[in-house]
Image 1 (tube, rainbow, N blue to C red):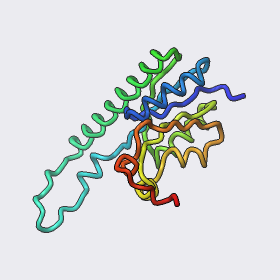
Image 2 (cartoon, one colour; image 1 turned 45 degrees about the vertical axis):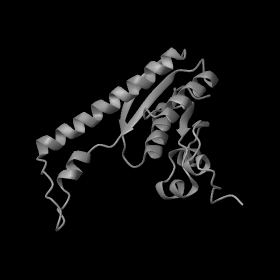
Image 3 (cartoon, rainbow, N blue to C red; image 1 turned 90 degrees about the horizontal axis):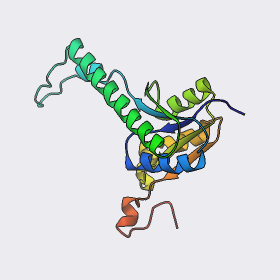
Image 4 (tube, rainbow, N blue to C red; image 1 turned 180 degrees about the vertical axis):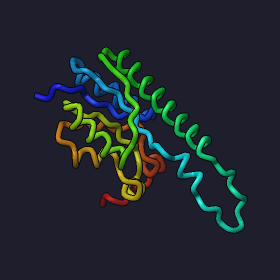
Length: 174
């Protein structure tokens, strides 16, 4: 039996909130770690972007400004994780919050945490996307399911994908 926490991926979206509530009902007696993954270095990447012809020049970011952008993103991730942990506590869980830097992908970061913390399970929300956008954008929940060495709970968002809301038939069904 794994001794670590149940890891809840939390980005502040309605899908993540729904997954947290559903996971809390299933994993009620287990310690929760609510994780918000953020990408470090965005400010430095923006400051290094080339300016293309015929576009207004971008305001250059010096390294101090880029550092401030990163700090702001880290603070936002910490606040998001803490908000998720607060929701978990309201749902009756013993919960901690953690903002984690994304090294590769969100899924790879979650899987790394499972390994490092001996995580019991991972809970992720599945955003309602159509077949094409899921294939083009990738899917954190799909990647966690394929790669995780522990149980994974994927909770679908209550909202219908755009193609269903419009009465269209999804492309991947006959």
